[in-house]
Amino acid sequence: MKKHNFSAGPCILPENVFKKASEAIINFNDLDLSLLEISHRSKDFVEVMDRATSLAIELLGLQGKGYKALFLQGGASLQFLMVAYNLLNKKAAYLNTGTWSSKAIKEAKPFGELIEVASSKDANFNYIPKGYEIPSDADYFHTTSNNTIFGTSIKSFPETAVPMVCDMSSDIFSRQMDFSKFDLIYAGAQKNMGPAGATLVVIKEDILGNVERQIPSMLDYKIHIDKESMFNTPPVFAVYVSMLTLEWLKDLGGISAIEKINEQKAALIYDEIDRNPLFKGFAAVEDRSFMNATFNLVDDAHASTFDTMWKEARINGLNGHRSVGGYRASMYNAMPIASVQALVDVMQELERKA
Ligand SMILES: *Cc1c(COP(=O)(O)O)cnc(C)c1O
Image (cartoon, rainbow, N blue to C red; front, side):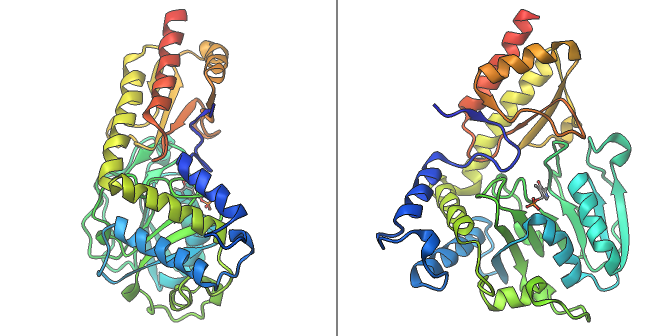
């Protein structure tokens, strides 16, 4: 039997996606060839790329709105750099809500003036700053919608005329929002969409072409758009598995359907964290992430008992990130509610024993 997998990333994917992906490695589309040995320019693979990109646009509700979806390599981390390379002329504004935002700021710094509009670093990033001002002459405003490490998420984005860029690596396709507010969205696949190796970039074409600098081909969004993510050999397996996950999500009813399930899972774990006197939540209640729930033991003396108990309950990946400590339950789209219940059961058993 499969373990309850709370890993923060790479992470759980739907069971039938794993099954179909493994079949395609042996015999893809009844070609009597593996997906891994056919040309990325063959009709069969071009169809995969087309389907994956159009499903991404469709699920985000962005059809006919001037957006292109790309599958690139280098992870979300390369997007920290590519965003600045392609969009930063003079000045950019960033909201600093954690480790990933800080890294995005670091990569963009050499390209122009960086305005950190607000930061929650003073409180180890346990909340989302609000009420900040975005300079109206910024080339773009960058946020991180879900802070994977600290377990916070932005519930409401500011209204601004400045183009918005968002790192949605750990909550893309998990909750409804007006995605057309954003001019560029990026997400490493390995949290909510597929295996490591591909990064989804959804970009409004008309924000490009405003910087003077020479952009290296591999870092140039325009080239990747013109070549439909086939400028060089794409990560074929990661794109295929992402396509399977997006098909799974569409069959389930899309983002509105998965959002309801994600809300139930989040309510289950947070209710227990708040009820159980042995535990306390890490993130500010109003900013709690529905994807990554971070929590600590009130008394660390229970740590070794609790750790033994959850491991015996066949739970995987519950340790918190080293910068937060404690525990982190990552509950991405594919995680069944039964796994969250299994964790809650262990927390209640600890309370009885303690
Ligand atoms: C995991 C993560 C990243 C880093 O992704 P890579 O694909 O490993 O570069 C960036 N941002 C967020 C929000 C993440 O969760």
